[in-house]
Length: 480
Ligand code: FAD
Image (cartoon, rainbow, N blue to C red):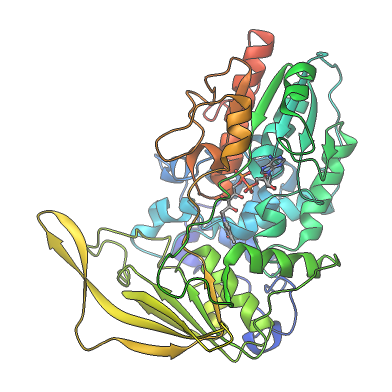
C-alpha cells in the first residue's frame, strides 16, 4: 500500500447531503459533490489488513484494499478494472448498498469503517467520465441462445456475463422499462434512473436484446422459450407482497408499498399514471421498518403528507455493534436512512391491531398497541403491554412488511419445483428442469441488490458450463 498510516491521519468523511427541507421538494439524489482529494484520503484509511474481512463481507467478493490503493495512487483505470472484475454494476451498489463490507471492515473495531461504498461509487463514476466504460461486444459468438426472464439486477448481471461469454441473450421484462426494483421499487432520490438507462444502453450496444411488455406466461408463451432457447434463467424476483389480514383490511386507503412506490417512480420517469395513490395532505402510517418502509417515508414527504409514522414490530435494535440483541442484526436496521432524516416519527415494538373507517368505507384510524418480546422456552414471543392500546389518525396505510416468494403461475408453467417457502428450488442455481436456471430474489427470497448481482454472476457460470461443457467466466474468488 502506498499509504500505511492513513487511518491514523484521516477521519471518516462522507459527502454532505442536501438539506432535508430542500431535498424533499424534488426526487433527485440527495448527495452533494465531494472533492476527489477527499476521496483519496478516504481510500488511504484502508489498513490493507493481512486478512481483509471486507472481501468476504461483500457478497460479490469485491477486492477492496486493492481498489482503495489504486484510488490513493489516483490510478482510476486500475481501480475500475479491479472493481468491475467482481461487480457488473458498482454504479448501483455504490449508491444503494447497505454495505456489508463496511460492517466487516477491520478498522471498524476501533474507528469508523473505511467509506467503501462512497469510494465504490466514485470509482464507477470516474470510470464512466474517463471513458473506460464503453460498449465492448464479444469478439466471437457461440451461437447458443439464452432467455433471461426478469430485468432486475439478477437478470441484468446474468445477461451481462452470458453475453460476455459470447451467447445471444434476450431479456424478457413484463414492465415497459428495464431494471426491476432498481427501476420501479427504489426511488430516484436513492438511485436516479439515468444511471440504470446508461448501463442498459451499453448492454444493448454490446448485443443483449431487451424485450419489454413481455410477460412470460401471459403474452409470451413459456413453450416458445423452451423451443427457441438453449437455456432459460428465471430472475423474476420475489414479488408477492405479505398481507396484514386484520379487521378493516378491506377499507379504502390501505395499499401495498410497491403499488405506491411504482406509481411515483413511473411519474418521475414521465409515464402516464392513472389513479395515483397519493400521500398529499394525509396522515400516513408505514407498516414495516425495512428499506421498503423507508422508501415509502421519503416518497410520502415528497408528496407533502401531513404526517408520517413508521411502525416496526421488532424491538429497537442496539445502538452499538456488539450489544446483545438477537435480531435484527447490525447494520441492517440500525441504519437511519436519508428518509428518516427528513422527518416523521419512527416507533419500534408496535403491533397494528385493526384498521378503522368511516361510513364511506374509507380508512380514518389505525388501532395500535405496544408489545414486548419475551423469551419463552428459548423462543421470542410477543406480548401486548396492557393500557397502551390507542387509535392514531390515518388516511393512508402502506404495507411494507416484506415479500413472500415469486409468483406461481410462471414456475408452474415451466415445470420447476418450489421450496417449502415458495421460492424456486435450485442446486447451484440449476432447477429440476435440465436447461432452466434461476438467480436473485426468485431463488433466495427477498434480499439485496448486491446479492442479486452476485447470484446473477454465479448462475451465468452454471449456464455457460451447461452450454459449453466448461466456463471461463470468473468465479467469486478468482476474479482478479
Ligand atoms: P427484481 O429486482 O424484483 O426484478 C424482477 C423482475 O422480473 C421485475 O422487473 C419483474 O417485473 C420481472 N418479472 C417478474 N415476472 C415476470 C414474468 N413472468 N415475465 C417477465 N418479467 C417478469 N436492496 C438494496 O441492496 N438496497 C436498497 O436500498 C434496496 N431498496 C429496496 C427498496 C424496495 C422498495 C424494495 C422492494 C427492495 C429494495 N431492495 C434494496 C432489495 C432489492 O431491490 C432486491 O433484492 C433486488 O432488486 C432483487 O433483484 P432481482 O433481479 O432478483 O429481482
